[in-house]
Length: 74
Image (tube, rainbow, N blue to C red; front, side):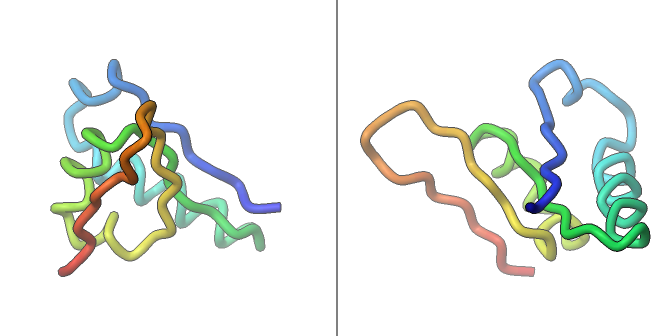
């Protein structure tokens, strides 16, 4: 099973959110577990503009029939 870091809307106000997320994911990976980032489509669109975040697997929450559109190009 993969560990997913759940990034919620309230966290978006945190300074250095990208650093917080990458630090968590890297520590989980260092412990020998697979880890990715889980968040809403809008949150991932914001986070995926950061090259470090774009390198991790994403699990996108979207509550509609349309598939999420997330750009992960670096």
